[in-house]
Length: 249
Image (tube, rainbow, N blue to C red; front, side, top):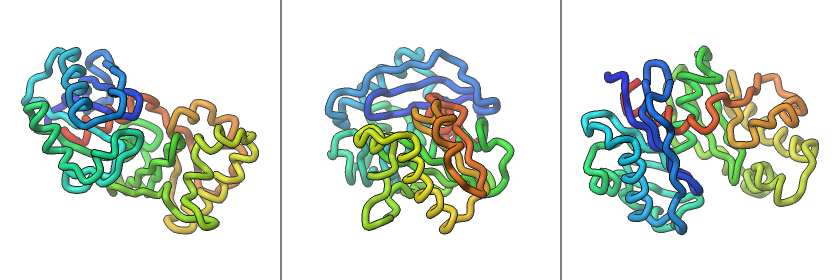
């Protein structure tokens, strides 16, 4: 296992990358960020990742590289597409990236990468039981980590409650769209986390997404027996997790 790897985090608005010391979770380079091409078309995103790599000094192709993406990823294929072109759905995306970048990659879901990073270097670093990361943003992304092992593609934002996909009611975008108070939003989050407790009985919840910076406004409103804490790695989580998974950390 190498101690260095490249991590690339592809999102609907930005594509970020850095070289990572996977033994410590520290960045060994500047974090490069370029805008995600309008429309999020496959070939355009591949070209943008190439530009990120160039700005990182075109890292040695022998260096492991992990790439995380906003989609369910099964055997290298993207089975969904969040905030990018629908052309990704059903695409052999890992092969597309490997051909376009001319290097081997490790290809994973973005929430999985973030959760894995928090387990290795962040809020769940010393937690040996079941950890559930939830990212509260446009939707609700989730990651399951059990005893340090990632259980991939847990799409728990799509759990049904009151007859609907509950992320449509409890994601941060719903708070903004409906102009909910923190208290009103917390009532919906309470139902969501109660359901996760009933189904999984985790040892720890981690809350990520941009709104986690404002955790003091809503986490204390939740009444849970399970500890719930904000993510600590912020915008570097996807990069760190993708790099660590690529390296075999």
